[in-house]
Length: 502
Image (cartoon, rainbow, N blue to C red; front, top):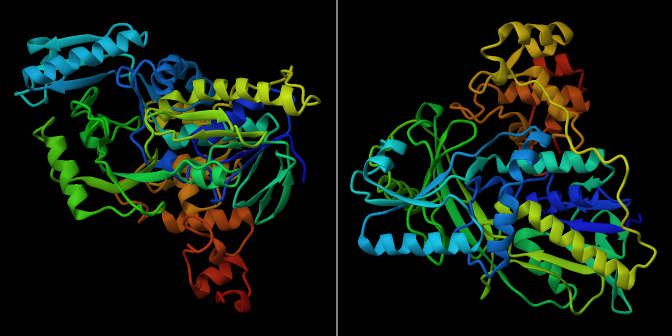
C-alpha cells in the first residue's frame, strides 16, 4: 500500500490533523492500534475548552490555546457535536490566592484574552450560589467551554473519511523504514505502508515512535482520576470551577458536562505503565475531598461512574513538541500534547499543515499541497431522540420514515435502535459495545448498560452479520459471550459448531 502521508494515532490530535490535511489533494492514511478512534487520552479527560489564561504566553500551549478557543463554535456546529461556552471560575480563599489570580489575569491578557475579570462577593455568589461560602475571589473567564472529547474525535475522523482520508483501525506500528536519511514507509501488523511523510501523533506512545528515527524524548504517563454523577446533579454548578492551579496541574475541578452530568476530578500523579487506567480508593477519596472544598454540598450518592485517564507528559519538558525531526527527513513530531491539548487542537492542525508544506518542498517536490474544490466542511445532522423529547410530533415523523427510531434500546439515555444502527454504519464504524457507547451514549446512564447491552450486542451481530460470540466490549480479547443459549442460536441461525468459542 502506498500513501502520501501516514498519521500515527487516532486521538483528537491525529484525527484533527487528518481532517485538516484532507482539505488538500493528498492521499492521507491514519493508523490506530486500537479497534476505534478516541481510545486513549481522548476518552479520559475533563472535556474542557480552556480560555487560555494559564499557559505561559511565550509557549506553544499559551499561543495555540488562545488561537483555537474561538474556533470551537463553528467547528462543533459543522460537526454536529455538543459544545457549551459556559465560562470558568478560578476561585481563591486568601490574599495570596488573590495575587495568583491577578498573575493569571495578566498572563491571559498577554495571551490576548479579552473579558477576564476578578469578581468578589455578591457578584461571585450570584454566578455560583452553591460555591463554598469561604471563597473570596474568582477569576472569571467567559470564553471557557465544555465539550465531549470522544464525540469530537469521532466526528473529526468521520469528516476526514468523507473527504477521502483512510482510517485503518487495529493497525499497530512495528517499525519505521528509512532510506538515505529519509522516511520511506511504516511496517505494521497488517503489512508495509509506503510513504514519504509520517506525522507522529501517537499520544502516550509518541516517544516510542520517535525512537524509531533517533529522537530521544521520554513520555511519562500522568494519571488523573474522575467521578461522574447522575444528571440530576448537573445543575449544581453553572460554570467550570477550578482551584488555584499548580505547576503539576490545573487542579481538581467541578463542572457540568455537555450531557448534563456533574464531573469532578482529576487528581494527578505519575504512573509507570501506559495502560494503567485503574482507579484507586485513595484517588477517589482525594478527588471527592478536594472537590468538596469548592462545592461543600457534593452528593454522596448517584455516582454513575469512576474512571481514569492518562496524559502524555514529556519528561523534563513544559511545552508541546510540534516540529519536523532534525535527524530524519519526512518525520514530524506532534508529541507531549497534554492540557490544554484538546483546547489547542484546531491551531495545532494548522501548525502541522504549515510544517508539512515546508517538509514537502524540501524532500517531496512532486507532492503538491493544493486545496480541493470539493472539501466537505460539515457532517450531516442525525436525529437523536433526546433532542426531540419536547417535539414528539417531529420524532413521530422520523419514525414514519424509519420504524427503527421508534424502538428505545437504552432507557437511561433514551437511545433508539435507529441511532445505534446509524452508528454502526458511520464513516468510521462502531463495531463494539464501547464504540456504540461513545457515539450514541447507550450504556452511559445510571445502569451502565445493564439493561441495553444485550440488545446492543444483538443489533451489532445482526448489522455486522457475525456471530454474537465475536462481539466485543472494546476490541479483540474483550469478547462479551463465551457461549450462546439455544434461543440465541435459533434466532441468529448460528450453527451449533460455531456456538462454542475455541
